[in-house]
Amino acid sequence: MLTLLEDKIDTPMGTLCILCDEAFNLRAVEWEEYGHRMAQSLDIHYRASGYERRLCRNPGELSVKLQHYFSGDLHIIETLPTATAGTEFQREVWRALRTIPCGQVMHYGELASQLGRPGAARAVGAANGANPISIVVPCHRVIGSNGTMTGYAGGIARKEWLLRHEGYLLL
Image (tube, rainbow, N blue to C red; front, side, top):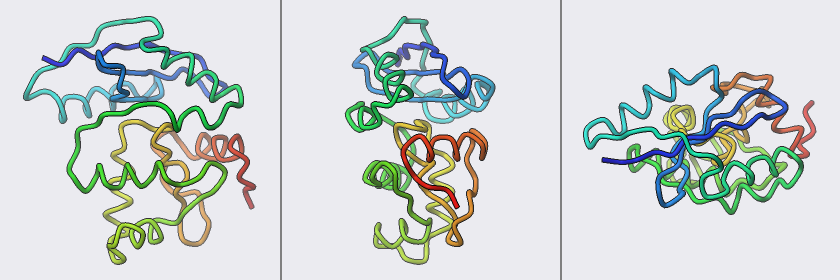
């Protein structure tokens, strides 16, 4: 049975739920009002082997580190350990997301090409949308080919805030 340690932090955009395993690898990060979506994702990925959620204050100092990100230490998220379920393709996309530099964006098609799958922009978009560790696995750094702020599970306003926070100049 997988034990997930859970904490919540206040951010400029609302309350953020943080779940990690007992080795302090992030497993999920989600906005509090979307907790039902996180629970569904956890059930999909971990129900077969079983999991339990246990409240824990600042597990592995992850909560404090995420608060530092929101306070301006933008590169701290690059140091946070993650462990995710998902398909091999999803995990490949999520690893690639972590290579997009802070303050920069990439189009879905560019990310697909980077992965050696130039025709897979939609599949990359679907994997991006299934990312369980938003912010740390920076899915907000992927935008539409015409520069539009497309799909972000936390809402477009949060996506724009995160990009501005990281120094990206929105048009």
